[in-house]
Image: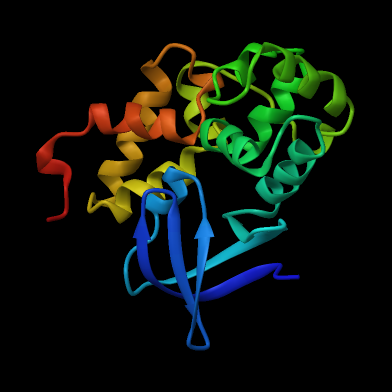
Length: 205
């Protein structure tokens, strides 16, 4: 069982990162937003889930233990495979998944590619009461800039893209304060919203 990897990122494209550990390169599937935080030659640490199939061994990587645990819980639902589970975490944080289940919001899952209405409802039913540890209060307006669970991940992603940290944090704060429906935004959606508030002069290039 490969539970985690710490090594050098030697390649990253789309949703796949290659992490070299002890001379061996491991191909790890991550969310697009997670991939944006990685750079060639940088040291990275990911918690991993090894999925063994008849025709392949696949490694899925996560930035946090919470994300890994929610991934495993999602996979326990009939009809939700590892790629669909990762797709959920590409759109929602662990806390947002927990809140959606707690509030019977199957619509949040129907927005994820590959998850239909029946599977979305099944996620709500199957995971009811199992995600309480990951729930977080939702808020709106300026207070959400602090409370939104994806804030730090998006700031890191923007810094990785070349923006100064102060400009990145300001952009995320503006997006969280002004974007409608910010409470339901996953990491990728918040990243797009923050990018929309940035100007070329904010980059540290």
